[in-house]
Length: 235
View (spheres, one colour):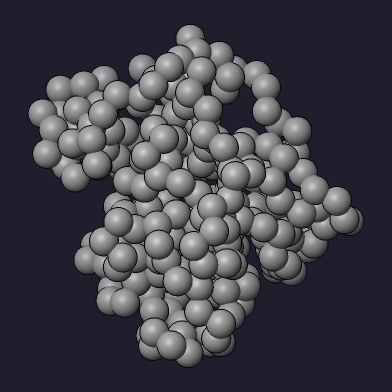
């Protein structure tokens, strides 16, 4: 499991996000005023990539908004992912780290799919070796098939859609399947809405899996809602 180091990072995570968010099509503000609001981690089975799903509250603009930002921390640049680079930081223990939008990182994609399939356990955001039971995957249509693999990413004003193919990888997301399965869409909810836990996302006729989590509200208290949904692709 990933080790959480008690150290400093320069610039801070919030400083990196504040500079990066205004260029996202799903970001509604212009000059972010951010605070941390929650999140969780997933482990990279190879121990190379740090995976953190951050929730931040933005108080700028017409009112506070909660955003979901998955990030990947790497010890070297990811080839071909220049457009997904959030920035670089200096970690007090690990040295220079390249920070990427996790929606575009293949390790994050694979582990998010593994979590939805029940093969990866969410971990506490700031404590080592501690599962986070508040982050829950639901499969209303039954168990997910093995061999799910991400094949493309599209950011839009309503969030991020990751194209997924059944049979595109082996059961561990390693890209060795036959690629002949159906097409799915994994939607990351970027603008979070508390209490949004029912609707078409819970219907097994339209959704294969979805995930819910908690986060802190700007004015105090906690919210809970959808953070991701895996659906049959719309043709």
